[in-house]
Figure (cartoon, rainbow, N blue to C red):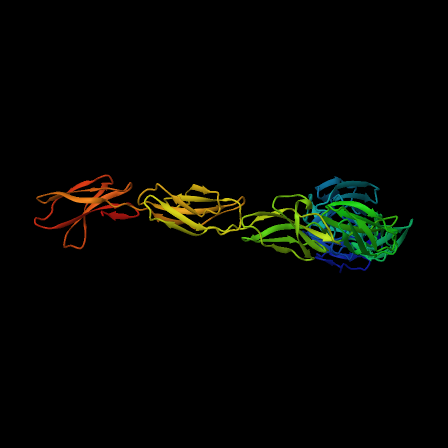
Length: 637
């Protein structure tokens, strides 16, 4: 479709801007020549060194447009230095142009400026057609001398490949725009050929329920709109005509479970693009809802659902057991419940239901997952004769059985059932148990009075009370005697006596197997030493220590202290040492004094005689010998 941009038949150049003084519409070209067509032509007559004679933005070009071709006619006077017509894009930059220079023909584009023909003369009308390949950013010139019949062509690249918005009449000389001292040229019948819009692409069809949504990419800038058609049951039908720049179209209330396809094409006054087809898509079959599973026994249950479709042929029911799905049944259309079965050993159970037709299936509708095997069984706390148990509740259980044994087991035959608890119970305390004993437990949910699978085993040891009333008798030399009370109800195990001299727990010095024996005597102990004792109570499963008690053994005092001789200021004494550990010292004081003075220290424990000196003449003295350790001391008796 050809659209005239300016044929100058309105007799003026009022729509042109940036005009120089010599740019006008005239009934005659320079020297009296005739317009190419009609009564007027655009004339650049006698314009000097002015680069732009005028610029034109038409309604078709405003904002930028990509025509199929752009054409015009020009005539050059033999006194002209040359000129031409340039096309600028919406960025304000040169895209392509054609010029004449005394009277050579020049191209001007992304491939530069160059002469492609020498020209046949002046004062003749020459037709210029510029064809565009916008997809590849290329152009093709076809220039024809209407007097000589000569036609020359040139192909090149556009400068930017954006679009065309502004027509510029400009002088040209010596291979350059905007040069030359005289510009005498005429132009007539500027036109462009509109092109059919580019076809859309990336068409996509999506269906949700019985609603279809078609989307596409708009690849054209000149469409008036888009035709949207639908293919169903062997024929195409129009869905909608949508406006320019639209990239989607929707349609509702399609038939459930049917297959559809859509196509889209762009159109304008020049025609329509090729059709672009979508993929096929099928409307959804509404899925059931409110799916549930009721557990009736450890091996059977009932699946129920709500039927949301009106044309299903049947339903498909599957059962999941511990992550593995299996077909169960295919109830008839309109059914909303069915019996299902599963293995007693299964822990996690779930059902799924879907509607089906001969064309498609609905989405699966799932019940909640139901656990039938008790999990999380654990011993939470122990006391001397009690154990607290807890577990995680399972769905729909009628109640829980608790099983107990004193050794690990694997089946109900290995345990005794010790509790029958109501639904919802998740904890229980076992009482009247033996101290320090290990007990093993399992819990099972029951349905209709039948126990399901046992839980994992858990165990706990009751607390073992320590010995009470521990005391130490330290009255006998070389011995310490312990006494305590038994404080537990267990008949298992033994007593251990632990001893140290440094305050640590120490090592075992005796084991007492007879639990009725609650005393122990440590013999042949070191004189004057401090001993720490702990009484440990052991069973097969537990051990507990009493508090630590300590005592110091008897340190025998030296005996038989006598004065052997006195000479001047010296006195010699002797005695009998009686201890097997520690040291001795000699202390003196005037008889009438109240405090003792150490005269000799660190005397070995076997020393039995000592001479003191530096006594005052005529003074009466008292003298004593002291045995001592780090923990106690005794003086001569």
